Amino acid sequence: MADPEVTFPVELISEREVAARIETLAEALAPRVDDDTVAVCLLIGGLWFAADLMRALARRGRHPLFDALWLSSYADARKTSGRIEVRAPLQWPVAGRQVLLLDDVLDTGLSLEAAVRMLRDAGASEVLTAVFARKPWPTERAVNPDFVAWEAPARYLVGYGMDDAGRMRGLPGVGAMD
Image (tube, rainbow, N blue to C red):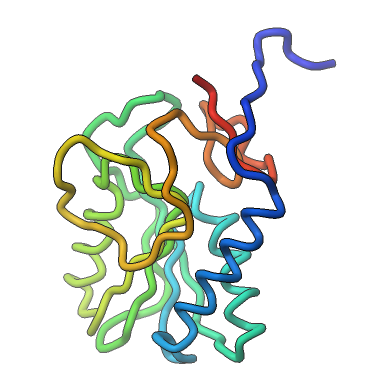
């Protein structure tokens, strides 16, 4: 039985459009990465994007190593705490390697900035960043992604890995809760 307090979002981008944007992004990324690149997914939200992008890169003959970094700044809230917590570190060494950092959404930029710093501190030779969605922000961010699949509106997004207190990550498209 459905929870009566759960509201469902207004769809902003369909599953079909998500897939098309991933293919376009993979086309742009394929010439920039190789099989020695380490693709690092920021967990948890980036998992859907990373999985689809890795398959799209494979269709283009690119097979980067895959790893994940679990950072948290939101917990179950709709606003960031402003502090980054490392919940699980990398498993692959990145020293001397190119890294492709993948995340679901660029909002404040805190997680992406912290991850880039961690990867550079770990000796990555280059850190490329790719996000599925970039939301507008009123001030300059410390890190802007190298690759963006979708320029999203300034709304509270759910679906395709993005959540509302852990819910709705599995929606195949992206919706707004506000």
